[in-house]
Image (cartoon, rainbow over all chains, first blue to last red; front, top):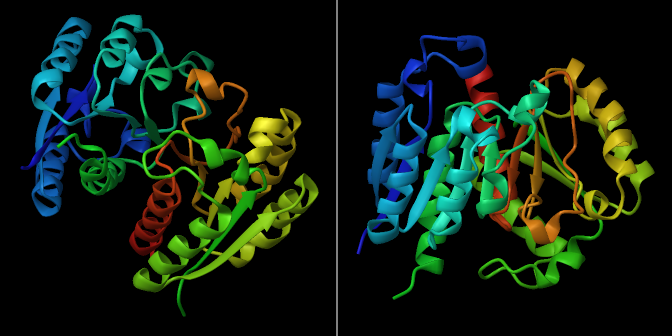
Length: 150
Length: 156
């Protein structure tokens, strides 16, 4: 049975590659999506890659993951620092949860130092650029069979 | 010549023997060292894995030895749990490292932001980039090695 993973991206990530490329790099969201799907295929994961600028939609996708996905990788972007709703949705999800950021928010403006997501997840990766996505998927592929309920 | 990675870990890893992470109860520094060595051998990089008995040693290694390497992985481990002074002291050492433009990644075996592990403080490095990986047990280290190797090869 293939493990399913949701890779959820939050607000403004649709502008990836088009804004602040010194911080976020030159890959577009479409490039990143392709890379994630390819990485999933390589490592035996089915990757569902999504992006939304709407907090409620992200919350509902986390709910959706409860029924169909063994893992969630979430780059909540700006909502990381504001959203109790996303925090609560993640707490209600039993699969493996990873908070992911392209930059390292703790090294940036002070308003990015708080994460409402961090205490609701199993693991955190930040500051590895867009390479972080593939690294996380490769590692998830190793971890999930260890934790999957048969 | 092969790339070289310096891995510095604080004591207190044995505190995490009861860390509730699947398959990683009883995780020790030695187990981590072995896994890191294996991965470095596979990736053809040299590894210098050091466990610091005290803060002074850790800071000295960061400040004086980092420039001899192509990448640095730091796991404050017990220090970030036991002492809130350690991050500040490490920070000034890390500022010097930032000037070398060396890839640096901070790793923790556990998720230090989980409520039960609240006492742990992350390091802060105001200048330069620093990656951060936590909560993957032993994999936190292995991911850091892979990330640094990727960075080194894309820089060259």
